[in-house]
Length: 122
Image (cartoon, rainbow, N blue to C red; front, side):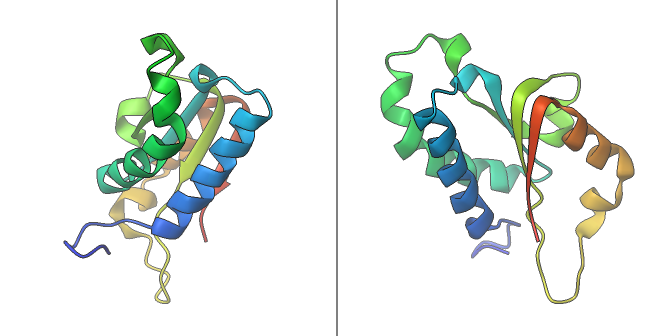
């Protein structure tokens, strides 16, 4: 949990930031990339972290070329070529929380990628 009691995982956030950067360096298109997490607080943390990586590019790109970040519930019905999945929960008690106990949410997260679902978790 973060300092305000929000459920976040800064380590996963940094890993995804590095992977998105590597994808961009390899010529990947931002419009082909999505990032999904069950927690809105993690999406907000990812948005902040990715601004320094993607931010300078956004001013030169039309809106349809943007990286898409959203919670699993808002990503339902959408798909991307590459989807990074941030599971967030990691603790000694192996408590995954109520959102990740719902198999339908897990199904949505792992089925939104056309080519490369990249799962980040522990």
